[in-house]
Image (tube, rainbow over all chains, first blue to last red; front, side, top):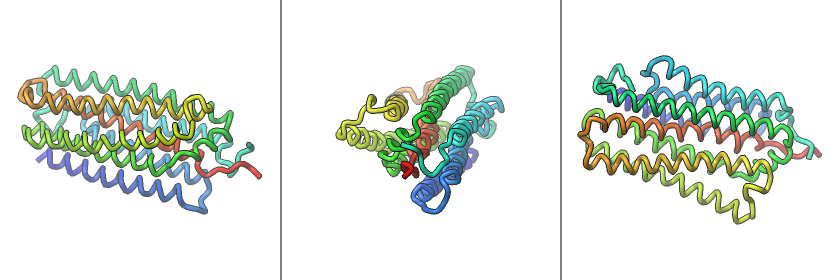
Length: 98
Length: 203
């Protein structure tokens, strides 16, 4: 029965990944939100997506804590670096000088 | 991987070693990609207009489609690994085959995307953005091809060796590697396709 619950977690993860990807597409195509909010939200969604893969596809939820931490840390660090550099290098402006 | 709820897993030391080995490989690979992401962001900040303009030539729909293909193929691999643990061989093979066929869609989509770029005479040397674009998506594509090869290998291997003591470790390792390909695309997508999308040159 453990396998059943693993499969169920994986199916829920897949459903989340599909919904999150649709939400990402809507955010990209949407109007009216500032670029800083759009990019921050999309990267936040990416972190959750990556985390779900790590925990439920790779099953690191059940692995020794050190493995789980290493992968979760990578996900957060990679997204934080991208967003941090993006925000602090003037990318959030609405236009850029050619 | 050691699994508290699936007692068959981690039964032999060799299996655990193989899974630990692949996890070390994956984390090392992720760190290299993380450094490339950082290099891209730093270089991008020096030439925002070029990077933004070039990012706007990419079709984010294809990037999202690729993501959906990879995570759906990944789900099939999860089912395959579960089937292997329960000794359901036919199901295992069918899920691996499904993962391979769905995964092949990523190759088709990439061929369309690269083909479009080449048709417009856009290549690695067009500008720094495209250098990163082809380097990052190309390196990812090689990982994808490696994963497809691994799926094909495990399918053929299961025909004769599904009962071998090392089989479960092998299929777990293949599964972990395949999920890494999803994981990387989840971050490559916003990096290349999203960051520069909404910007116009200042009037």
